[in-house]
Amino acid sequence: MGSNYLLPNYLRDSHLEKCNKKTCSCISLPTHWNPNDCGPCIVIVDEKKLIVKHSGPGTDPIEPVSIRANNHIPPEVGLYYFETTIINRGDRGYIGIGLSKPGTPLDKMPGWVLDTIGYHGDNGRLYRERERGVNFGPLYTTGETVGCGINFFDTEIFFTKNGILLGKELSFKLEKKIYPTCGMASPNESILVNFGSEPFKFPIDLYAKRIFSKAKKYKMEILE
Image (cartoon, rainbow, N blue to C red; front, side, top):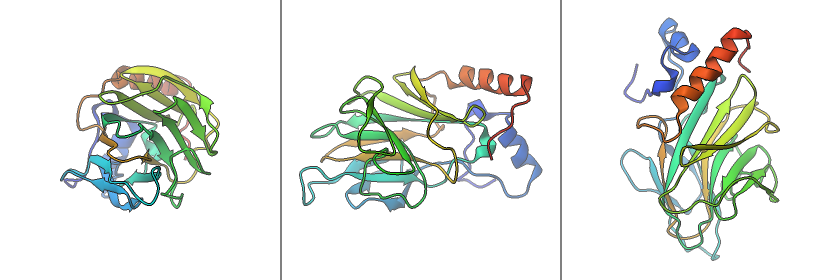
């Protein structure tokens, strides 16, 4: 397996790892942000491509832009989770963490348009494919960590803050390829993503064990 391959601890002995051991070409997971799949005001500031920053100001005081990870989340994984830590809330704290599908506009926040979903830090709302969000969780700011996960067995998306589960979302269709996504809208906003190379704040190992055990017990199939 190449140097770009990353398997978080919670996926050890999982269906994905077993698939990778059986085939010559491994199924890759997200490992860093994609510099070729982002809006114009987003800058990757480190060699590992884990830290991104809004480089505004642009033509407007508020200039929403998004960035996607280098790889999509394969359904074979069964369960996937990543976390982002807010390095700097920037001028207004307009940061959104979530998911998007290929080809969605990168000049919008995650959740504002079709095939995207996002939990936003400035108002604590969850946006599901429209610009009008619903109350979901607390606001988040500098120094705090927000997580996003997909449970392909139960076809649900869940979010966490500082290691605590906030809630789940069932209406977002887990079809096509889905990518971890971060959006920002005002100058100096900056985040650090953790795709599994470091320990998570949320106890995902225990959560994964429970999910995989349930799937095995009830012979649940992964959504392909």
